[in-house]
Length: 504
Length: 99
Image (cartoon, rainbow over all chains, first blue to last red; front, side, top):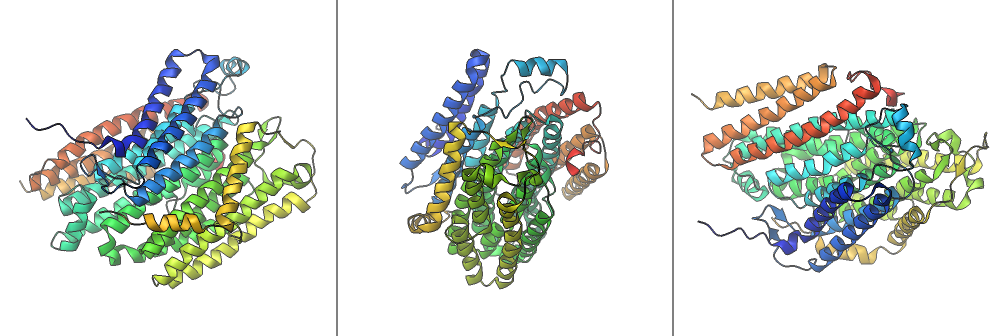
């Protein structure tokens, strides 16, 4: 009879709290009257995320970092990324819970009588909140996971709820369902690659922990073919999640079809989680096999930056344009992975925080630009927004400039730090392409600004709704964070520099 | 029997699944191909566990089965919803977003 396992619950508390909140949310679905659910679910979700953040603050200075038999590694980068995910999730939930974004009844066929009567009740599917919390828990576990089982389970826990919520849009439901189908099939396809890669890494090292695989990599006596197969397939799974070219095909369709608040949430938070895992795996495990992966990852980073920036120019839909922009940003973030030094890690962490807030804010603004039939995503109809709603247009312009990396925004500091790190590590080619594609990207961001302010509007039906308080708070706070991180980034950068060491 | 043969079988199953996802049109069949890929990975895990004499690989196989079951639940829910809306599960018909 062995002793009962010691799981170090205090380290796992932030994740556990989110999971508990999600389970309570499921119970609320079962036992609370339908008309009160929306409010209660929103409060539970916000409170859960807040409580989890508090418990994360309590463990930020710990010395020993291993929890649950070394399956979870709560080190500096993991804590920072969990905090980033929680902050993003908090504001994303505010936008999610605001106006009617979600279908009244997901099971009703679009256009049927059943759907009409469900819409007349004025309710929507409140399961979105627990599903979001489950996804948040998976995202928090993913960058902290340090063995193959935990990585795989975390990957699925973060993905499965997102497949579902992507299909729950209130309007244009066929688009939304199609997005869910594509996201699901391609996501499951990539997890199969991830798992097959994990199997061969296990075959290579006969260890399931990242530290054990690292030992086998240094040892150099094990079967190198298994290492290469494992590395290749595992990377495909992860690169799919971050939306890197050539695994980006799902991104525009899913971003366009999913309900806009969900798009913002998954664009921001999934990237943090996936890059967290990517950084840990490449820095901790394969740092000593760098010549096996750096050339191919360099090519992928260059392709991702160029394809994202160039294809975005031709887009006529604002959500699709931001999807390609997110692909380009995945490329910029990959340069931080390639850098493989401490500055690269710190810069990537900073960039993820900055990018997360810009994304939440930008998609939050898109939820506000509406007419009677719902959100307007066609870029042509954004013409003249600057005259009708000057504040919202100014805020959106600010987010676009931050995406483009103009000084005095967080995007500039992020890009500067990440390119500096890549330059110092000797990857000059990537930096040149990165700067060039930033210039290309600036073109289509600024084109939208020009359209909002200087183009003649052709129709009067476009209205910006008076935002209800929650969305307003979320977008203005995101704007403030973007400005503060751009004007006075020193405290955050110093904080990240003290954290940016992976523990093996 | 040589354990390597199981690895060849696993690689073959994985390839059949991966190719099937790309060339088949019915969402259900695509989904079955993905399940085949997961099972190929499971076979590889169990084979490696057998070669090495450790149990980790077999434990992972159980985890994979559970996760695959969850995926079936979510996946079939999405595919059934699509079928009810369109009366078709062909992945070629789902192309509204391409335009």
